[in-house]
Image 1: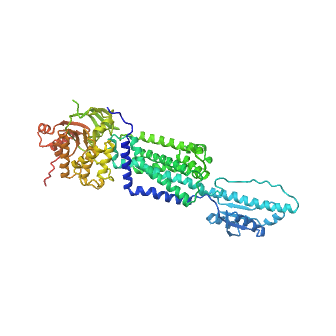
Image 2: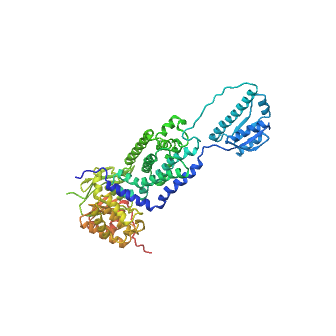
Image 3: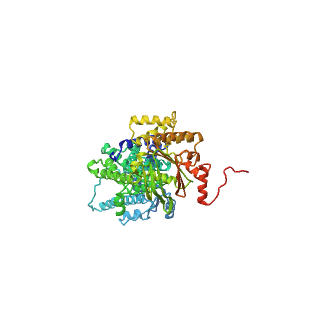
Length: 380
Length: 253
């Protein structure tokens, strides 16, 4: 008797070929992987910006002196604040912030310049709209800094006049990898991963379900086809589409957003390919849980949405509660973000990211195994 | 003697619903076996168990002596199955559909070309090679589905309502092909609601309310029941089982 073959390459190729033809004949499924990355990349990269600058500010200057004017100018010079209007009551400030016309209100007391001259404590007030914490936090620390620097300069001048010199302590700061702290540099490498993940997972989430909906699955079950042959065969055309998306996204990042890839582009592409296969496998697994395309779609959204927030794409994982941090360890995107940001921004080599690459490989294998096991050749 | 199909006490339950209730039968090789019964009586469920798509709740079945559960993979190599829906890839052409199944059954290049050519002739599909399956009309689709089910020369061909919704000419052509295949030694299991088709079977089985109530050659049943044709017998069986009477089809005003 013929020895039972575990994997037939011929069957695998037949499935891949069939799937190729089907993808080719379906203009929608071909257009989506080309248009979606473009749309998402441009929309999201401009929408997601944590750079806080030019906050509209309302000033209530009760002092109206050269000193108070100088003080306001220091705020403007920081580039974080833009004076929108001078008003003459606190009420007007609160009204403007309520209406959302202004984000920041600056109140300078009447005795401002008198107190500077007399070396008395200064008290001005900065009111910040805290509805958006990222903006508020940035405005707050910048406002405090501007104020402190101004005050220090003033007091030193006064002290010098009376002959006292003060020792200074300064800290020299250097920001590495992204010296201007542009959020673009942080967001775009991450966005490559996020967009890739979403597109590829959706592509395969529909793959098996389509067979189920069209009834062809029954015909496949009565053939000697093996689940691994079916699942891997179906994966092949989508790997090529996913790879094309990876190249497309990288090109957009480099050519349009002028992201300079510090590390090896080859390493980025290879690990990107592994990530593509991993996401495609995830979609295939979701497909085995779904009876129709609606279910597949909902399931994909449920699985993918948390990864946007938990993978460290937007918020640092260090800031997350322990439990959330553990969960984020089972999201493949988490590892790919380490890789893209590491390679693109820090220019690190394989020695520092090999564990992330291995994690992605392990995920892929485990997901494919579960998907194959779940695809039973029975309908009951 | 080894039978093409041998089924003993086959039962399938879906929860508390008994879809197939303890049926047993044997079909010799080379026969055309017509499986008859009203909609929902358990025909398709039985067929799906024989194909290995559904697992029996209890009982055993053998196809060419191979256990349908324990040797499911071997059974799959020797059966050809065509479902009610002609499960074709509608976005693939006639040629591509045949090619796909040829690959799935691991036919080599020469066999594939020869087999495809034979089937295209047999199913009268010449000239439609490049047409997408979805654009074919009922009769063509049916013959293509038959071609796909036959690509690997199965010893048992299982057809689930192959002629439902197909015009009379296509129906004749189709049955011509089936008779020819049986002559070549292939066993055919076919379900149908057309009693003219049933009468051209070697053996028919009536399944009603999940139970097999009769299995014999059609001529024998007609003689025994002293009926005009199988249609009357079919109606009689249902009338007896449900204690109702159905009027004649030709309603007089």
